[in-house]
Length: 245
Image 1 (cartoon, rainbow, N blue to C red):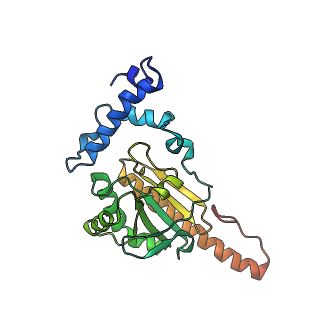
Image 2: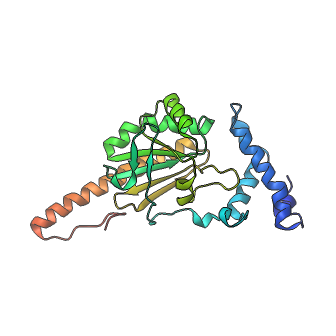
Image 3: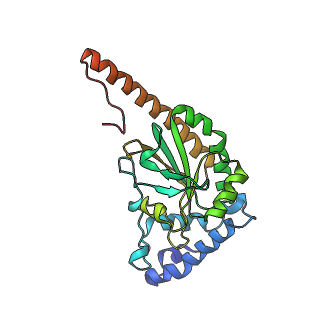
């Protein structure tokens, strides 16, 4: 695809949509098949994804999209109250942990999503010991989510966000294709977003960043708790920790 096509080629925004958006749909269709392969980063994908990030998409008021709608560190995370693949109810504000890792992934059974789920499963105990809970979210239906969780040996809950309400509220919903971006949020007990990670393809880097931050953050929270306890005895003023008052 030429640069002129991405810019609209003098045809205006509609010209860009006629040429770039079908290519994006074909790309997504390609990675959603069992033939997804490492060469998916070749061809016109990179400029199209860059164009998706930089342009404003408009398909009517309900599908207007800009990257500014993605939640950032310091924002209050929308409440999540949903039934998971295990049939249990998950409520973000009631998670019994120092922080909660909410990870969005595009599509079950695709290459990178499978690898990501497997790496999180392999490191789930490490997250629990650090004091974090973990939940996965995608726009797949419940049956697919259940089969996917079983296939990757997931020991953490996964939420089927069929109506896309959760992904939309967190600003991670891709327009047109209607799937979530690969974005992970770390949320404090006060529902404040204390970290955000976004890697569409670098799954290992994604996992490493989450684990490193969770260890650092939970240790800081524990340290502050100890300081608060000591402050009650000595009257000293404790130091702060990100994401806490």
